[in-house]
Image (cartoon, rainbow, N blue to C red; front, side, top):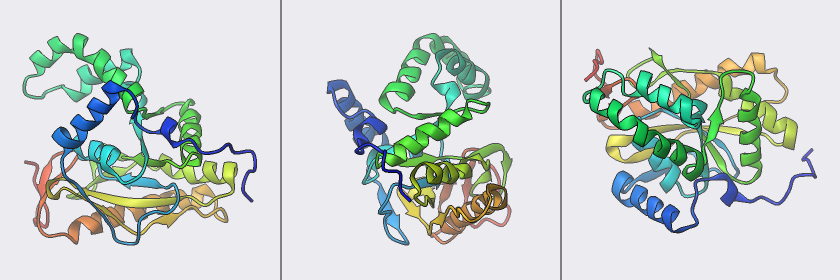
Length: 262
């Protein structure tokens, strides 16, 4: 039974900033210059209700394309370390720019760039902070509130260190509990859509969703939901013509017998 105490949905509060001169400029810049033309392909119909989109991570461009060009409202999960200034600095210094070409130059620019990056994630993108400690309940509460207000939630659950195949890394399973919290709050069944981002083809492929089942314990279904989404995204990628796959851990050419990092 649906909770009758839920307020009237207000999507504009739960997605990236759209009002104001600076926000409009950034949105235009992201859509036209950074991302460009993108096609959204729904193999089993476009979601009719607020849903969770589970996607492969293609570094920055894919998530930005989904955020700014999807025909509907989206709010994205983001590592809380990118949203708090001190941890954002440490994250860039010790992980994101470490061992990349031009690392010394990027280190010099960090004091100037970090406040901008921090502002962008927190204010402009309005991301949902993902915590990895007891504060994780804030992540789920923010996500449920976002869904209640008619906005889809995008999640990129890959664990960079554990490559699964030529398409994705293994998924962390924690996101699967969102269906439990959403049902407890609203009485509604949440759908998880597998989304393959074919960045080099400029396409997003939405597969058949899997639904949270309130009749099963989360211990029973957490792994099955995760494995279904991993397999579905992989199958979506392999069903396409040969193309270069942009992954969080390297760029692969699909259908190669022995994928190698490029």
